[in-house]
Each structure stands twice: as C-alpha cells, then as structure tokens.
Length: 383
Ligand SMILES: *Cc1c(COP(=O)(O)O)cnc(C)c1O
Image 1 (cartoon, helix red, strand yellow):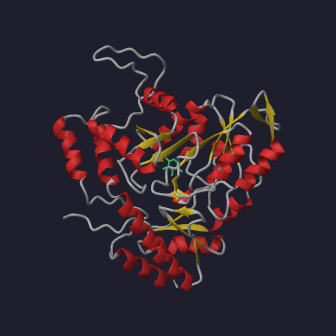
Image 2 (cartoon, protein in one colour):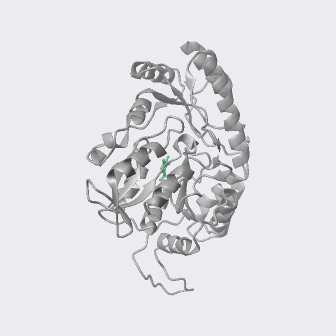
Image 3 (spheres, rainbow, N blue to C red):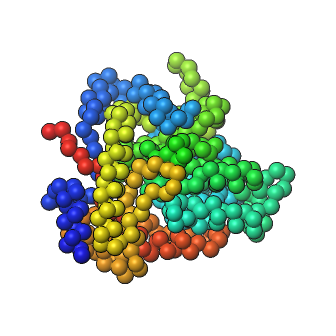
C-alpha cells in the first residue's frame, strides 16, 4: 500500500527529490517588484507596495479595511487588544490550532478557554461552544462571565483549520447573544469562502498570515481585516509605534508596536496575490486527485465542509488509529515525502495545561489520527 501512495505523490509532484509539505511558488512578478523596492531604497515600513498590498487584500477579501503587519501573530495580538481583551479576561478558542492563536491571547494577559472542534470542519464546533456558554456563562452588566472561574469572557477566536471554513455564521450568532466579540484566525484560509463570503470578514476582526508555508507568502507577514473604520485607524496607529503623522517631528501618543510590514515583503505579497486564484484552483485540483486516489485504497481523505469553497491549504487524511498514523509518518518521511501529524493539542503544552476547557473528544480523536500530506502548488518555476 505504501508503495502505491508514495508513487502517487511522486507522480503528482513529478519529482524524485524530497517533496515538501508546502513550498512557496514564485513564477510571476516577484523578482521584479522586490528589485523595484531595492532600487527605490524604500525597503522598510514606508512605501507604495505595502499600501498597494493592503488595498488589494481588502478588494480580494471584501473587507473594508486591511492593515499589513510583520506576521500573523502580531496581527492577532493587535486585533485582540483592539477588541478590548485585557489582563484576566478569557478568550474562547479551539485546542487544535497553531500555538500562535494562544500566544496572542496570552500577550494581552488573557487566558485561553478551549471548546471542542467539529469533525466536519476541524475548526471550532458551534455545538460545543453553545454547550459551554449554556453551562458556564452568565451575564453581568452586559458582559458574559465564566461562572466557574469568575473571569470575563471577552472574545472568541475560531480558526479555519487547514483552510477549511468553520461554521462561522453560527459562531458569530451565538457570541452575539453573550456580547462576546469574534476575532477570526484566518491565517490559513486566504482564498477560502463560507457562503460566498471570504473567511476573516465575519467577525469584528479577521487576521491573515503570509508566512513561507501559507498559500501566498511575503517571507513573513500578516494582515488585520475589519469593516470598522475607527478600529482600522487604531490598528494602523498601534502597528506603527503610535507615531502621530508629521513630516519630521517624532511624537508618539501611546505605547505602540513596531509591527508594520516592510515594503520589500509587501512587494513579494503583491506579486503573490496576483496568483491567488490560480493557486487555489491548482490546490483544489490536487485535493480532488487525492480524494479519488484515497477512496480507492480505503483511506479517509478530508473534504471541504458544506457551504464553503476551501483553499485546501493543507490536505489531510484520517487514519484508523495512532499506530497506523505513526507508521504512515515514519514510512513516508523515510521515502522523502514530507508528512506531519496534527499540532499537539494546546492544553497539552506546558503553558496552557491549566487552562479551562470542556470535554473535547473530537479534538482528541483527530490529534491521534490525522496526517497532513504534501499540498503545495505544483509550480513550474521560471528558469
Ligand atoms: C500561521 C498561523 C498563524 C500566524 O503565524 P505567523 O507565523 O505569525 O504569521 C496564526 N494562527 C494559525 C492557525 C496559523 O496557522
């Protein structure tokens, strides 16, 4: 069986070399635009490309405003701060996520709280969220509090796992009943739509990442999405050291952050974004081929949830048990096919082991069985 799988993936990517999980694809205007910033000397946080990149991301996602940052983690940090998350608050999220989600919550002095994931989306389960709120939340002075810990429930951060949209409309609706703000971690889901609306545009904020392993990259980079003009202005201000604009004077009116994306990175982003629809199409084609192949050999391939168009950022299969998973990982990696298990669940990491959580059987089930397989765009690079 392994021989068949390895040959299939080798044929798909048409190479005898190591096949990475997800490599970037540079075959458009990347070199031209980056070289342009070097010639102009505007490589740092002021320049046309960073403004242009924000404009084009806003257009593409349908968000009214987009603010570029140095990475997705800093975008999440600022979004949570501007949501009003403060020391001692709780922020609801999912245990199956990349560690940045929880770290950004902690940067605000708040505590993550974990609800289960859905087996249909691999993201936050509205059913588990509803159960948690029913059982644990009470309203006081217009704010929700966790009855058991006494902490204020300020925000909720669902994550669109591997690019697959969560049932975000249900989650937003539930949170609204409790006056809890939704910040979408859409780091993995640029190009993914739920009910024809781009992920990251349903909550008060959404954030994107352009790390080297994401669907498009700026080397390192992130974006804050919002429809609120005042919050967008605040986000730009906080990410640019809270400097009051002036031709030569340096006056900062609060403690800001040096979080603005440099122009040279944005140049890469503008070129990459020109290819996003092509990339999504190729990735969806790869997913379809995987789906047909794995059906034949009776392995479960994860397909996009209902009502969504997923970017299929990382393809995933679900094996029978942990032993099968470990064997799959061992054999494929030995033969130069990069595969990896799901992230260790957040409450199993030393920093988050004491966080409040409800029972999370779906997250446990997936953690023990899921394997990500090579998912990058098949890329005929320019010579
Ligand atoms: C990539 C990622 C981020 C942000 O990562 P950066 O490396 O800081 O850009 C945040 N959350 C999730 C779920 C991610 O996958």
